[in-house]
Image (spheres, rainbow, N blue to C red):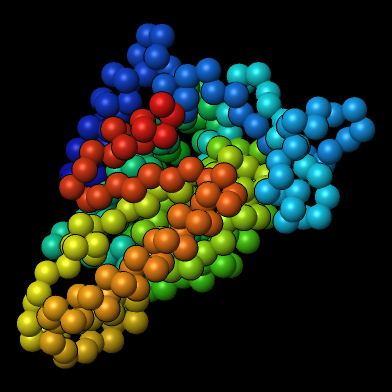
Length: 275
């Protein structure tokens, strides 16, 4: 196993076991967290439980049904292609892996059922529902070591595949950089969906580079250009438009989200989701 990956796993395991020790076992998934799912309204149901967003979308009433605390089905789905190949040391892919490791260890310690799915251009990295540490660590190894430069995934196809695979209402973490348009509404109708956005700070706050050769990490095409103030303004405007659209989409379908930069500790950011 890669030495850097092993160090990452040991660090994540220590953080999770320390946080979730004793009476704190439910913290990362929300203390007293009652999992919920959507179902069609039936005669006699409490109308106060109607989810009006989904009702309007589907044209018939749906309610959000709460359950007592129980064993959760926790799914970590990673959207992985060349856009994660950014930074001096492939930082985004490493941070995505670290985040996935934390979530998978938390599920394992809590006694929840963990499913890991990584979508890449060449294959789907699948860890079937499990409580075993071996499968959890094998999943992180595949996320860490899969070559991504020069690859591109069909996000729409990946999300449809994910929906088709998940038969049981689950707590679904979608990991990726969210730099392109995507639709999580179908998943959010049935599951509790959380978007975990992995970004490099220089993606959001680019610097003037002057004359430079830029390489598309998905297609591997190269372009000689001048990257100055005007280029930064155009780029920043497109990124802001993308992120505004994302925020509106998340709000519309009750999807929680958190952004983790590659220079941040993922655990602290994940904890903000459940406070």
